Image (cartoon, rainbow, N blue to C red):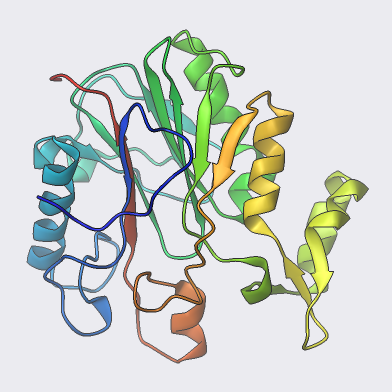
Length: 257
């Protein structure tokens, strides 16, 4: 099945997709490709949406794998599929097994996809500000290294996420970053409403490059500003919507698991 995806500068030699909210069956505020089982959407609609993403990725629905994302730095090595009920509590996955699609669900946080084309190892990470600051990208790279990958060979792409101009934060948010490194101040600016704004995609790219991944980029799509193509937790909050959907970002090696 063909579903709209966002073009990337990297990862061209591996099956992947930063999917939008288009092409699914969900209604109302979840329209249409809501892949988040944690939402209050109709479970049957979510299951159908996930099946469509799985088909687009060339895997069976049961091999489209998501974690119970908790804004941690934990990365797991995937050796075989798991059921939805048994999905691990983690925010990143890596594998060298073919036929498994690693899928990250987001609605403003940054999905990051990884590939070492020599070692044939892939990874996917959910990087909100807590996870990015806590080291989820580095832990993803470390888990890939355990399977034979090397940072200097890894390609990574940061998918659609909230952009700096839409990401207002408070003093305590800035303090958390400054407590780790005063150089983090360069990822903050003063916004037009007199509040700090944070550059999440730039911070993710910084952490990737510091970890030795030079081949990385951002798709330059803001989830908050593009209501037609992306779900956004922050936008839903600002408009007093009762819930929000999640878009999928996936990567898979060819083969069968």
